[in-house]
Length: 325
Image (cartoon, rainbow, N blue to C red; front, side, top):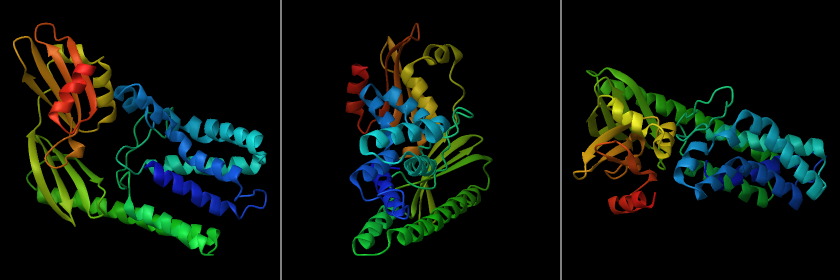
């Protein structure tokens, strides 16, 4: 989820912690600890300062893994809180553990996902039922603090709010399953291998990708109605001599590590170079696919001259980024 949602979730845990007689939940030290624990798995965002490839490869990876979720973050933050604010170790550990776990747990429900089972399994868990920024979830959390401020019990409000959110998540899951079935009925003559149904900022709109034996269908659903905007023939595998030249490129590795559905295009640029463009099909917006990996290669040696991976919303900006890498 986005930073604001994680921050608000940490605040609701402060409200729940008022039930604990061993903690002064409204103290500045505990509030800072609970909210900090709700945010700390995303500390890997600082890797974006290095480059996109490093950030994409590692964001929501090791910092959301089993050792960090259930040992490293809870112990580290509890020790800091104990020595910095004098908070009791045992009760503080419980609330810090709950905050860190809740952060990692809710992250698996969006399209980005996490490596929450690492090191047992490095697979990205991407359930894709909740958008990274979800307006109903933000509204419900905002309402929680308003009602707490005017005098309602924060503990009772917590259970009411999270009861509603559980029902909301279940509803989103069944909406997704309905659309998967509808894609199959809308493409009755296609041998569908996999269907991606991913949320957007709008409650009733979803991004849709159907992978068939011969093509990719890309579109959106609006209030249960599906419109396909693009159809791409599935390409043959990239020629082996080109693949062997690009497979160790940091931007290519980052892109294929993160993206779960993509296609490629080969384009001649001039007599000496050609462009290999990998396009993530999940993020179609206004006729444009903004998440890409671009590589310029020498036509004779297939050596990568320039490469870039990331979000690009204009071709001019993309070419400038390529020259900077």
